[in-house]
Every structure is written in structure tokens, then in C-alpha cells.
Image (tube, rainbow, N blue to C red; front, side, top):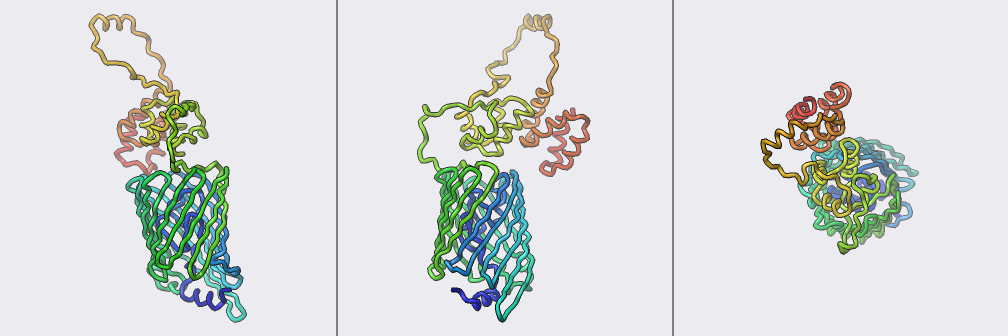
Length: 440
């Protein structure tokens, strides 16, 4: 049994050192670089927008196999393609010593290569013994940033307790941990992570390997050479739920256990799982009609992200049937396009497909004048499609091109101008280009 004296002494040195562990963060200290393979929530604010949608997580643990110690974590998050919000509560301690923290966090991703996070935290420490009764509250801010210059490399940094870092008032209770690290993903379904963290006990290096053998199973294992700590975890998705378990071992403090459950309102599947062998080409059936498939059917296509599925649906609803060329226009990657071509059929033929530009004779020109048909009425979908094509050719992002090509046909230009003027994702030059194309 760990004595009350140990807890009280620890709180005087530095409280809130033990971060709640779960399968997405193997160790009980800050790790900036964190590979996210499952929908399980963690205290790493850079993980908030790791997947789109809503999520709930609850986990509980027994640190160091001590019957008087326990940890709890409960959190909820919502994120879209680029930004997300999370609230969570975490607790560590025993019946006479308790550390509670409440956090509101947000993360925002810029142009898919910079991810930033900010968290506002309220800390509460409580000591209740026969001789001591102490309750203290603190407030602080965490900051994090990650650079993702390419698909297989991420560089991350976090600074906890930013206010305490520049003001020594609370340093006896809160140590402002900082951490930096990298994530390498040399192959699908496999990642290597290294972090170095400045803790109150000194610098700690941590090394982690993660594999995704199936879309709903994630396995992680890690090691810290400074204190010879090891940890391993597994997360298994079953429909809308993910069950997770973590086992950690410290050579002096013993084993730690953590069990958790996560709920998401959709069947989560990580499509970046390991492909042990490719099926023969003859066994692949093109059984998905790209222009009639539902959102759920599109999600089953390997390599294709949820964001790309939404873009396909949006293009079909607002502009019309997809051609192979339109997959490029809406911003799908080469891997996604190749996979769609492999598993789908039913593409609309491009209007200029198979036509050659041949010089016309004067006789044929004369015949055309005589038999020239009356001008047909152009539908709104055709107008939207043409404006979308012109916007793409002018370098406007696909998401904005779909939005403003449709909005330009709404009654009046007030809604169009209001939306365009308040759009911070576009430069003034891009806005002027959109006006010239959509309002001419």
C-alpha cells in the first residue's frame, strides 16, 4: 500500500504528473507525437481531429497494481475535416488524495500540413487525512502544433501549463511538461513513433510501434529506456463500439491496467490497415455504381476517405453524374482514384470523349447554317457544372468551387456575397476570380 505521506510529499514536489493512460497514449506523461489508429479519445489535443464525427470515451485504470490507486477518464468530441472540439474529465488518486482536471480543447488543421491545438484546463487537488485538509484550484493552458509535410512523416511539439512556464507561482504543484516527437509511417498500417519529454524527473525518451492488422483492430507497444518501462495495448472495434485494454509494466512500481470503451455513431474502420497480400485481379468484382452508390457503399471502397465520399455525394447532388475527370477536379488523391476505378463502374462519359477536332469544309458550314437547330434551354445543373469546371481550371479549391457554383444561382447575390466575403479560406484574388466566373 502506498502511504499518505508519499502522496502528500508528491503533491508538494509536483502534482498532476500522472497523465491518464489509454491505448492511444501508452505512457503516463505527455507525448506530442501520437499515432491515432482507433477512435479512442486521449488527452493529446492534436488527436481531436484525427477522424470526422462524434465520439464518446470512458476508461478506468489501476496504476501500478495498487488497490488504493485509480484513474478515470471521460470525454466527448466532435470534429469535421479540419477542426474539432473536445471536453474531458480525468482523475487520479485514492480516497485521501485526489487530482481532478477538467479540460476544454480545440484543434484546427491548416491546408492539411499544419495541425494546431489549444486546451484550457482547471486543476483541483484535494488532500484529506486526520491531520491535513487541503483543497487547491489552478487554471492553465496547453498548446500543441504538428507539421505534416508528407504522408509518411509528422513532427509534433506540445507545451503543457503554458502560464506556469512563464510564471513560477504554481510550479510547486504543476510542472510545465514539454514534449517533441516524430511519427514515421513507412508502410500502410504500420507506424513508428519517438518522443522526448521534459518531466519533473528529467528527460524521458519513448519509442512506440503501432500496427493495424485489420480495419477495426489496432495494436501498440512501447518502451522507455530511462526507467525501463514497457507498455502494450489493443483496441477492437465492434460496430459502433471500440473496446480497449492497456497493460503497462514498471520494474519498481509494478503493473498498470486500463480498460476503456468508446462509442461513435457509425461503424469506424481504419482503411490504412496492412495488406498482407493482394487478391488476384480476376477475383475483384466491379459491383459499385459510382453514380448511384450510397454514402455507406462508397465508404467500403479501399483507400477512399470519408471526406472524399462526401465530396462525391455533393458533386452528384449539385452538379451531376461523375466522370473519371471529375474525380481529379474534386480533389481525390491518385490512390483514391485508382481504387475507385478498380471497384466501381457507371462513370459518365466526358462530353469531348472520342471526338476529334477536324477542319470543316465550306459546304459543311453552309449545311450547318441551313439545318442549325434552335437553341435548347440550358438546365441549372449544366450551368453549375460549367461554372464548376471554370473555377477548377482557375485554381479554386474543389470544395469552394462546388459551393459557389451552386450558390451563384440562388435568388439575388446577397447570400453569395455574404458567404464569399466571410470565407477566410480564400485569398482576395481567389474571391475576385470566383465573382468574375459566377456572376458574369
